[in-house]
Length: 559
Ligand SMILES: Nc1ncnc2c1ncn2[C@@H]1O[C@H](COP(=O)(O)OP(=O)(O)OP(=O)(O)O)[C@@H](O)[C@H]1O
Ligand SMILES: [Mg+2]
Image 1: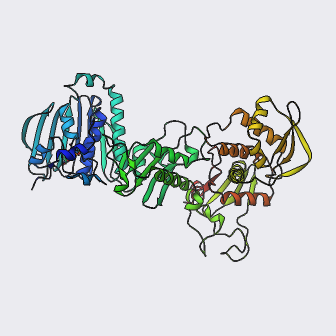
Image 2 (image 1 turned 180 degrees about the vertical axis):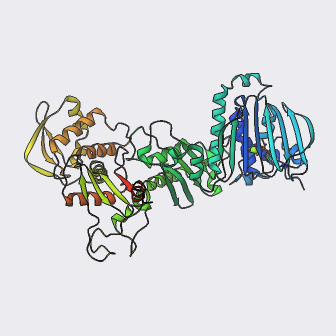
Image 3 (image 1 turned 135 degrees about the vertical axis):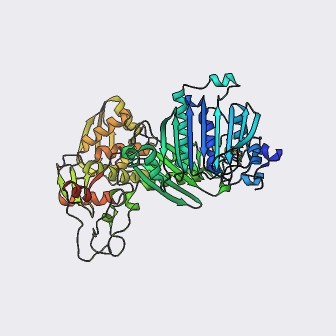
């Protein structure tokens, strides 16, 4: 077999960002596992002792190396992955610098055992960068690298290593990231002989998520799948109602490579706008795929950053991709004859199953005029109805809040809503901070329908008011709204218009305890199901929950 490895010309080598390859045990794990993946491994095993201080061992069943390559692999800038600077554009392997092995071998007691054919093998021993021996070895095809006494010859660096538990955690995290990138490879990690990670080869990313973190997380994720021009965004975004202020998982992969990019995560979070409460951080696993010449992953010594040719475009597309994943209506397949079955059909995706009924007669499709399923209000708070495969339950306040929010946001951006002149103008008193809030939001208040005029002292005259629903109490809504504005409610919302819209929607919406007649219920449900982001209110709570028919059947012992 001819050697696969060639030494790069200095010129090329210089173009490759050099830097600190080995920072701590986790970076050794990252580099060695990346090498294993580049070598086509289907199974990678990581062993740690003493948090990686004592020992780090990575074994793979990849291509292995013949003796010449095994020697050359330890030479700086020796790589089998690129030969020319132009190969850097769109490089598909994790490695390309030819730096990792020599860097690691320079700061540890290092052993490489490898076989390219499963018959003849090579064992190389290096201490602090000096090759101490090259022997025969017997092993199956693949490679095992053992790194002992990391930084033994750099006492200052060794001193900076953290407690074993901390270093172990960082190493598990480094492996987790790569395990997400490659569900088709099996990974194990043991620390002092204790198994901390053990995931089999799987076909689907969601199965890998399940393997790493269990059902608890996997069940809260919505699929992301969106393409704009040459950029494809896939992965998972967490249901807004499950987002928590702490402990979220946020991972971005660009062309399969893990990238630390707070801007992309922020763009993704922007896609949640108005569906998660301020402060809550949804988990995100995003895979960006775009042509190699549109992104440079070579700008960071540890290859953790990507430089996009058009960053703004990437952020916009990521935001849109996440936003769309939150719209089960759009995700649902049309059900019933004639294709689109109207708004009810939207109860697919997250809500599983749709209703093959036309809501509005003559709106194409179903013959016979039917008005959609029967609606039932319970506890004067919830609206129940049957879908194809479930009982759907709508929270009337949350639903109306979502519907109002989307409508009001448009009014605020335009001329405003037609207001109703009050027969008897209201006179209301406010506190000084509230009067200030009124002053500050006067134009926005006008656009939603409140026309206000200072009377004297603390009194304000209200001459017009909106009319979002028949039981609307203008005075109470205005008082609550102004008090919220003065008190900084929704303060976490960056955008002033959105903050105002959310506050107004929350205060103006139908409340729990309001009795609704069938037409009001129908109007609300239709407007909800045709909203842009119907499944969540502006606090991130669900507007609809559903009881699957299968669940009923299970409980009644029918399945
Ligand atoms: N586990 C492995 N199996 C097979 N070949 C390997 C393995 N690890 C390293 N090699 C070979 O050794 C070479 C040097 O590895 P090294 O990690 O130092 O550089 P690289 O992966 O090419 O680039 P980078 O420094 O960016 O990681 C690789 O190019 C590869 O040919
Ligand atoms: Mg490498």
